[in-house]
Each structure stands twice: as C-alpha cells, then as structure tokens.
Image 1 (tube, rainbow, N blue to C red):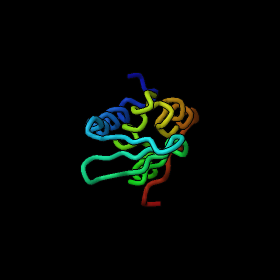
Image 2 (spheres, rainbow, N blue to C red):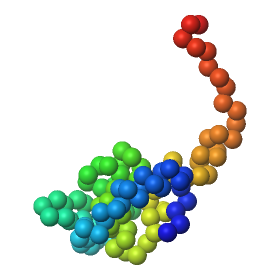
Image 3 (spheres, rainbow, N blue to C red):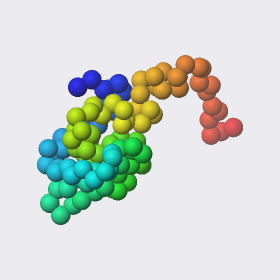
Image 4 (cartoon, helix red, strand yellow):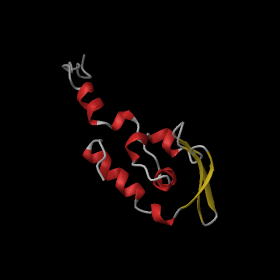
Length: 106
C-alpha cells in the first residue's frame, strides 16, 4: 500500500487501521456508509470526508470506520487523508526560511 504522506504520520495511521477487519460496512446511498462493530455504529460520508465519531474531522485522518468504508468500495485511502499530512504540503511549509524568535527575556 503506497500512501503519499509523511512516514511518521503513516505509522500512526496504520496503528489506527489495524482493527479495520472487525468492522462491518453497510452501503446507504452514494458514498454514505454505516460502519458497525457490535453495538457501535457510525455514519461515514466519503464525499465530505466525515464520520459521526468526529475523529476524522478533528485529526484529518480517516479513523477505522472510514477506512473500512474506503476498503468496502475497493479504493485506496490516499484521497481521504487531509492534505496537511502530504509530503508536498510539508515541503511547501518549509520551502522558505523560518525566522528565529526572541526568547522570554526580551
């Protein structure tokens, strides 16, 4: 699986996704799905990249429920990880000089 994001981020992402196989996905309509595991159930909308658990909204990384939905439609998660984690955005952020700041004593 080739994902174009920073390697540290990818390690964190893999640890989140390790339990994906335990989630049962039900298609609702369009790119809206329900991910279930036991008594837990979450609504995932891949078009707007949200999940009712709100972890995707706060972290920018699709949580296990969203990853299960992406897997259900046989797609790679590349397009569902926020641009913040991409190598291109990282390079863009540090493409200019970062000016040092004064210490507390000033």
